[in-house]
Amino acid sequence: MKKFLDLGLQPLANSYLDNKSINKKEKKFRLEVAFNPKNYLVSILNTVSKEKMFNENYPYKSSESLTMRKAFKKFSLKIKKRFKPNTILEIGSNDGAFLKNFNRRNIIGVEPCKNLARITKKKGYKTFSEYWSPKLAKKITKNKRVDLIYSANTLSHIKNFSEIFRAINLSLNKTGILILEDPSLLECIKKTAYDQFYCEHIYVFSSISLQRILDKYNFEIFDIENTPTHGGSNRYFIKRKLNKNFKISQNVHKNFKIEKKNGLHKFSTFKKFSKKVLDSKTKLNKIFNNLILKRKRIVGYGATAKSCTVLNYCKIKKSSIKFFYDTTSFKINKFLPGTKIKIKKYKKLTIKDVDYVFLGAWNFKDEIFRKERKFIKDGGKFITHVPYPKIL
Ligand code: JHZ
Image 1 (tube, rainbow, N blue to C red):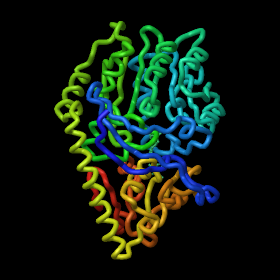
Image 2: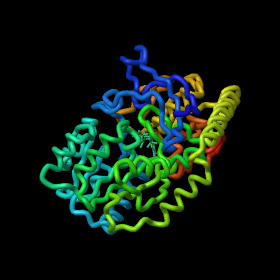
Image 3: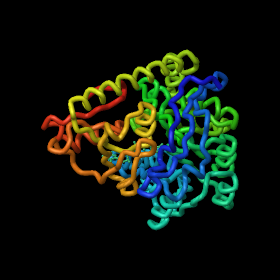
Image 4: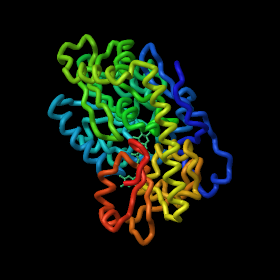
């Protein structure tokens, strides 16, 4: 592993503080990112135990954004049309944003965060509230394996590949399809989106690195879709190497080629990226310092896990951002980890209250700009750090 980035001491990204815990010492870890020249994998070096991150207090809900609800709906229709699966298993079903597009009889969810699993269970969806493991896979599919396994923004959160793929092997039909969706390393590098790195994102995959991992378990990518979700993601369609029902699409070769053209197989690319990250930090601080000198009122929008990395790395404090607006009930009246900036219940932006808004949820910029068009028309401004710090 060759280290290329040090994002400093960071708290756990989704461990929002409440009035009680705000005065306690927070657990912190050093967020360092490294490249493995053998399998091209980019991963964080110091990991946090899954129990500390994914438990019954997990605050993130996929259904909070219209963009995500629409994306899951659209993709579920595609799955039905292209693969016609009778049985589906979703690993990391969260609050059911994907699951709910299927008949209750055809889909099973796995969600270790009990507060989220409860939501889908209540709606009548069979949900196993446990961590994905070979033991669980056996329990779920002891009589019958499934036709399709889907997992979005989950594989990048699980450390042990051998456990993951042993469990998938046990639960997927011989001719079954595995679909994985995770942020794209290429987009992360292109956009200098260093905030894709935090405790939960153990890996940020490229297609070339994922294929190297899959090789070990006799799986292969047969198609790739590049999607705009979460700032640019890849959707990987995967089969067993022995399954000859699907030809390897040109999209796969195209993605491998583009990634290599952009140097995702070379350490030097990541060294250059780390210089851009440092530059991004300097520029973002300059923007904040200028606005504060002019006594502008700044708030944040979308108290994301990504914001945790940015604000703690750039040392942007609560004296700079008055509070964050967020729609997630669980986050309201809590405080962002590290910076302790308060999170308030979302209220439409008005120029009467606010001058500048830091876009924590930059990946939902279009949805947010549509919602806040009056604020923008009246002269309200946003601050973003992606692809480089600027005022919008
Ligand atoms: P969002 C989480 O990351 C954590 P985060 C996790 N590790 C992961 O991989 C990704 O999700 C998938 C709010 N919001 O999706 C809702 C508004 O307030 O960028 C959310 O709190 N108003 C599992 O946290 C946050 O912003 C809005 O109009 O980086 C968005 O979080 C919209 C659109 C969102 O994920």
